[in-house]
Image 1 (tube, rainbow, N blue to C red):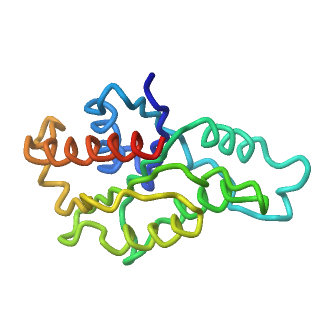
Image 2: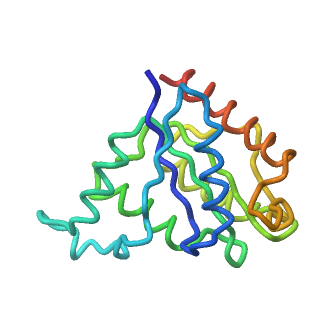
Length: 182
């Protein structure tokens, strides 16, 4: 039986390269994994004042979606050498209320995608810091920084074979990681 894996995309842009990469991962994932894109752009900013006995419905839905998964793939751009607010907000919503962290023990991997040369290195590592605190065992190798992403797609939106092969190596390693931790 395949493992249900959440995929969170840190870019809200309709034509996002991060979203394109997430969709490719979904296409090439081994049969041991079933990838599900989970929307995070509509989550209200985390606010303990509204996270009461009756939290916003979007908080509850999101927490239940993550709780129902056996792992998480983060696909994120880098904004100003850091993590996009939408990813950090999703982390905060899922880690609260205190003692009800839905992220704990879920195998994770981080793929940073950027038009810049260093491939979102800063965002990748900043996100990894939070994952340590959240008790998410995170795939260490191979690391996934994809720089110059706009050049990896042709005019028809097809990704270069070399980039597809790299993504395949990442998703295959992640599948082994998930199995190892199951």
